[in-house]
Image (cartoon, rainbow, N blue to C red; front, side, top):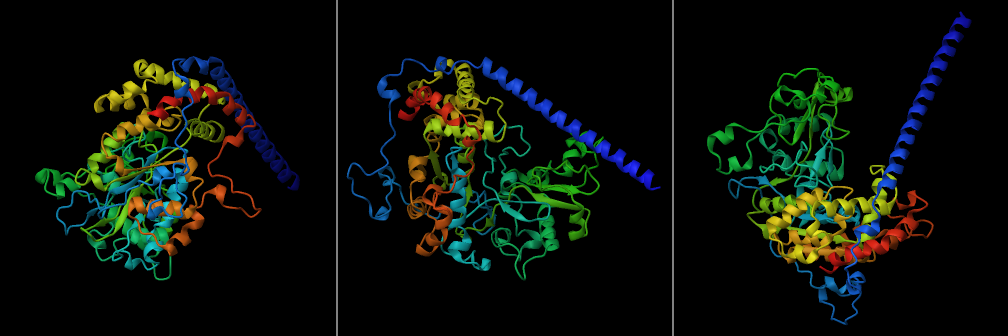
Length: 574
């Protein structure tokens, strides 16, 4: 008996070892194929020098950004006294008015979604994640109004709120990048729709939830579970009440569209609905649904229903929105809901909050800026934009390092070759406008938008060259909004500014409340890494930095920089 058992164990061990050898062989084969592909791409890449025109004069090629210090001796305004701000920020206008933007309210007393009024639309790899974290923490209602959430609605100091999403346990988290208005292809299942249902989500205090605090989801997100707070089952029940039915768009409720509009609400195509009825697609076979599933009611378009008896992955828009047996143990039900996006709802003047959307891919997406303007048609002046620009070569190199060296999205492992491919594509997209900034400035808005739409690819990831052509994207954005609605910062200055200077500047521009106490609380989150000494007395490493992934990174940057500086110089001058 013992010998038989030993033989079985030996055979099982041998099978496991063989499986491990096969898996390793598959991985090595994949790596060899990737290396071969990378080698072919490097061999076929056009010379970077062939895409750098020789017509640039020395003055353009050597153009420098404006000085960061107060070298002209211009008097420092009182609000900026002692902050050490660069001179170009002295004209930052203060916010006037309440900054409230409600989406098509039926009346001043009716609650309606509060739309974002504070955007960070660009540019990627220019400290946008760091700045988003700083703003969310420094100007949160916890810091501004205290830890008693029931007082937030009555708080007279303006604070910032991030859009939320939830997992299937109804636990809310903050969105940094919504990507609702653009920054990705129109075919995406959560792409922009003019009624904004996927953006604002269901009313957190609608119907049976009307007696709850206006901001109960943000209370849970910011303060977490506390004594006396809702249990897991209660949270899941609340989300069910919000998501398990759809409502007509605000345009119907505010008097447009008539009875037909109100009688035909849109329903979610996420979750189990992705494989139900007419929504069924071929991919559903691989998810366990060989044929269309029966329709199981209408779910709000910003929500997804996941269920025990359905294709397990069908509704997955995040790793957390999937069915798990643990959900049934918590709620006692065989289905659950996730919310993709939640915004606060309020009557006129009921909340003193600014909603944020920090999606740094918006500004080079022509459709995104037009959509933001359309969403704010009632009060376009309420919208504010914080734009961070960076040395264009350094920004492009940082983005390429992340996607090629860090995340392995880009198979081109040489920076010069990667930039040559991107510039070649831009040149082929429109030869007459390639690096022709004087003509770019003269284009009518429709033609400029068409050029960005065709050649800048929605401002998506890996657009290393065009996402460093800041002026082309800003030129289009300024066709929709006034210059005073933009706070444009140089990354190099932002990373050298003390937290007190950054917070004072942001407060002045946005109207968010700041006093000495809140500034002191936020110092750790808003002090740049290079100014913050670590435990060993050294500056902390910057977040999301991938250039050190290659020992040849500095060499590759030095090789490409002179030619790329010539490419970006006229855009810098524009």
